[in-house]
Every structure is written in C-alpha cells, then in structure tokens.
Image 1 (cartoon, rainbow over the protein chains, first blue to last red):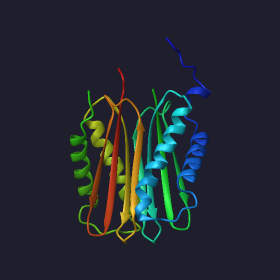
Image 2: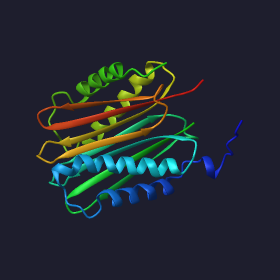
Image 3: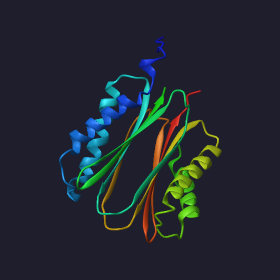
Image 4: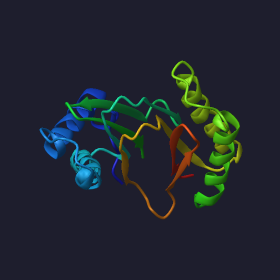
Length: 113
Length: 106
C-alpha cells in the first residue's frame, strides 16, 4: 500500500497554486477584450486549463476550480465563500485578474484525500 | 451516501430569500449579505448531518447591464461527490450560489 509522506508533497501550497492560476488566466484570455460571444468559451477554458495544470502536480487532492468573468461597466460584484472541511489538509486560493474590459476571479479549493 | 442536489438547492433558496429577499442593492451592506448567505447556507447543510465536506461560494452582482459568466470544474470522485448551483435574482441584483460537496470516506 502506498504511504504518502507528509510535508511538501502533500501540502496545499498557496503560492504555487496562485502561480498556476495566473498563468492559466493569461494563457486563456490575456490580451483579449470582452466579447459576449466568446465569454462562455473563455470561462470554460480558464477552469479547464487550471484543473489540468493542478492535476499534473500529482498531489493527493480533489480540486474544485471556479471562475467568474465580468465585463467592467461600473456594476458592483461581491463574492464570498465558506468552507466546512479539515483545516490541516485542505486549502483554497483566490486570484483576481483584470484588464481594461473585464475582471476575472478564479478560486481553487483543494481537499486532501 | 450520495449528495442530493435538490435538497441542497432548496436549502440555498430559502437562505437567500430570507437574507436578501425583497431588498435593493446597497453598496454598504453587500459585504455583510454575501457573508451571511454563505455562512447560513453552510450551517443548514452541515445540520443535515451527512458525511461531506462542503464549499459554498456566492457572487452577488448589481443589475446594470454588465455581462457575468461563471464556470467551475471539479476533479473528484463522481460517484459520491456533487455540486449544485442556484441562480437567484430580484429587481436590482443577481445572486449565484454554488455548493460543492466532497464525500468523507469512512
């Protein structure tokens, strides 16, 4: 039976995850202006890219990636999240990204298996 | 035990109605509303006493013509884990709440 070592290999490292998210957002929508016809495909590609990079890390986690993409026109947007889990093994990380025409908020929740 | 999206969805709708039901968007109160929505929803879900870890997220947006898109992707055990998303609106705001339930293996 495999025994996972505790320490680096099994910890949810916020900086690492945050870096992965930023790269995924840049790759999926960086440099683009808000276009209603493409937003659906952008939100999907942001989450899918993030998830595939996260699973490549090979750590014993289940992941949930959510993304919110909004056109900047002065509207207020507030988000909150609440989690009922095991503080030792689980963690989350949220990245806010923006360009001239849109905001993107991506959250990753990692639950230790 | 499998996650019941219908049950969770009903719980969430009741919570949102009771917190921001007939109220107009108010910039100074919005923080406390989003926090109240997630906290109360979580409390009700936990009260069901099922063996799940929960993640509840809520986004509230003022209605002003802007486009809003959300997506989520999950890497888990689809035989036991599940999610449910509720879209709610009133005259002045949209509210999107997602619940993710991850099974605790016993």
